Amino acid sequence: MGGFNKKAEAGLVAILVIIIVFLFFGWLINVSQRECRTNKDCSSESYCGSDFSCHQYPSIQKTVVQYSLLWPAVIIGMAIVAAAFIFRQPKQETRAVVEKVREPEEVTDISEPYYKSDSNIKVP
Image (cartoon, rainbow, N blue to C red):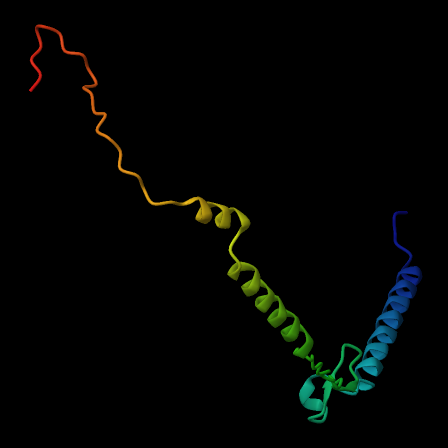
């Protein structure tokens, strides 16, 4: 009564073995079709990509940009000269003050004691 069917079990095992064999042969074919595994397998001008084939190194072109700084230098120079002329001229307020300056007059002595002296306090 409780026996297993030996033919059904053998069929499942055979199908499983066939699937494993096909997967193994597919992996072998995939590995054998690889052009490279590491960069050493490629030439010195190539590298091994993630698709296991050799690729040329990309050429990086460097663009050199040259700027002409003549006109900015001329503008800055003119600004410095203009600033020198502006600061060289005396201000209008300064001229008025200079004209009003006269010789100092002698002042009479108007010194008085700051505190009024009481009869109790002696002033030296």
